[in-house]
Length: 229
Image (cartoon, helix red, strand yellow):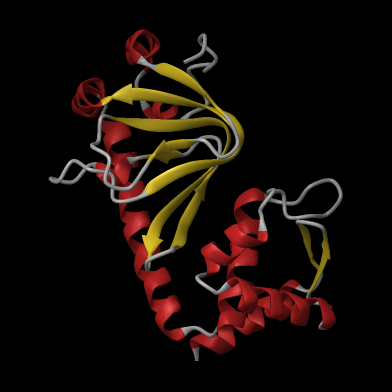
C-alpha cells in the first residue's frame, strides 16, 4: 500500500459519486502501487473488494484450455476492475495482472455496497459497464468461433488503437508483448506471427520491436467486415 495518490476526481469511483461522498472515499480507499507483471487477483479468488485504475494498464484474462489464457480486455486509467465478481458466487471469474507499472485504488465490499446504496448515478454507470462487458464477451465468443485469425488480429489492432490512441511516434500507445497480443486475439502464437508478417508484407501495418503502426486502417477494417459476411 502507498500514501494517498488518488486525486479524488479521476477514477471511475470518484467521477460518478456525489461530492458529499468524496470524504468517505478518501477515508476508506487504499492505494496500491503495482509492478509490471504483478497480479491484482486471480481467477477463483474470493471477492473482497473492487479496484479502480488510477495509472498504468491491467489485463483482464481467463484460463482457456489447459495451458492457455484468453485476454478479455485491457483496463486503463479511469476504468474499474473486479466488477465481474459481483455475482452470487462471490469469486472472481477472471484474473487481473498489470502489464505496466501503475497505481490502483481499492475499496472493500462493505464500503462498495454502501457506495451503491447512496450514489444512484454511480450505480447506473456501473450497470452500463456491466452491460457493456456482457455484450463484448458475447462478441468475443462469437468471433472466436466464426472469425478467421486474420479478421481477429485486424479487429484487435483496431480496438487497441481506439482504446489507447497513438503515441507521438505514430505507434499504438500500449506496450504489448506478442504473447499478450496472441492471447487477446485467441490465436496461437505461431498463427499470430504469420498473420503479422502478412500484414507487414501487405503494408497494412509496420512494426518496430513490440511497437505497431497501423498503416492502412481501411484495409484492416475490410478484413473484419469480410469476416462478418
